[in-house]
Length: 460
Ligand code: GDP
Ligand code: ZN
Image (cartoon, rainbow, N blue to C red; front, side, top):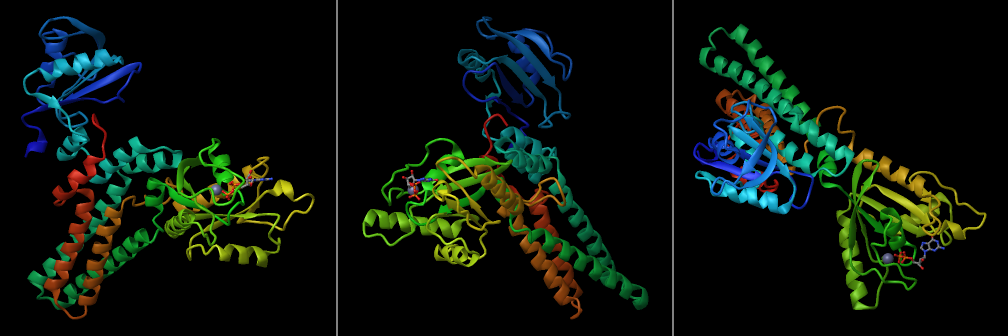
């Protein structure tokens, strides 16, 4: 198997490219000890897992390229499970390219593909697929809640949950198979069969509960898509600017300026919000504006959260009137809405009756911004959940797809139970277990590996 890396040794810059204080260059494979010898001109690698200060030279010319730290991680107790080496050099582009070129000239060494180190770790059983995905998400995490969820998955919480279910299925299957093979003593064995049915029913319930989580893990991982919607000129673009504290959207006093959809990524209380500003929703004569309105509607339909903006001076403050104004925007059914009553600075003394999920704001003075942020953070926490409490969330559509298939097989098992076709029932348990195994990568995951590791950075 080529991905076990029995032959070649891979290397890559693991820190971000560009000028930096310290750059980390990493290698994995049987040539790791040799490359340390060649580059440092020493007879052997330094003691395992100890940083050693060395002069790093070009093996051809013996010219010193840098003075840095080298580490030797003999397999199998390394990240990939293979012999690994790291060079911590000064993060200047010329130093890094000099060392990378020197490595590339050594026999048996080649640059690593994106995610190839982690892929080798997976191939050597160092982590399962959910942990590898967690690692990838950890590197991509931009908010605190995303980091918590990714770290938890990387540490194996999700994988362990699926492993536990898989073990329960293995046991149930063993009992069922024993019954099929040796069902002579009916009294004892009926009991065994009943126990298997109870186990499977309980498991099915757990899996269905896990699936029915409102896609919280996926929302947290990918960001909650929120759309600012409302009539023209109420201050939608001003709201986007206020939230991202920079003029990202065009704000102008003439109605119908925002024609395209503009998206910014925001961190609200540790949760990721992908906020888009849209054209004002109204019947437009101008074809370009009409296209903007069409895109706004399209965006609105895909939203996880709607920020409905109204002009506080032009709506009656009664709950009924606010409800009607909100309904006129036709938010997709079931999508949570936050109602922002903007231009509060123009209200004078009269404050409309408000309470969640409506809030008064002035984009002009910033008054009411804290309350809005608070309200948004609450909505986001509700949508994404607390990544540290309760069961770990499934974070990929891949997970829910296989779990759905697993639950379907367990459901068929339940239906078959009464008809007495035990061989068919056992087959359903095997199918269910295989779906779990495909999530963790314990069963035939070859086809998804390329997809999963493609999104990794080079050097990880
Ligand atoms: P949009 O069409 O809904 O995106 O509205 P804009 O953000 O482009 O704003 C329309 C007009 O309302 C601009 O002239 C803004 O300066 C003004 N505006 C926006 N927010 C406020 C506010 O809170 N108070 C006042 N007085 N004017 C505002
Ligand atoms: Zn606008």
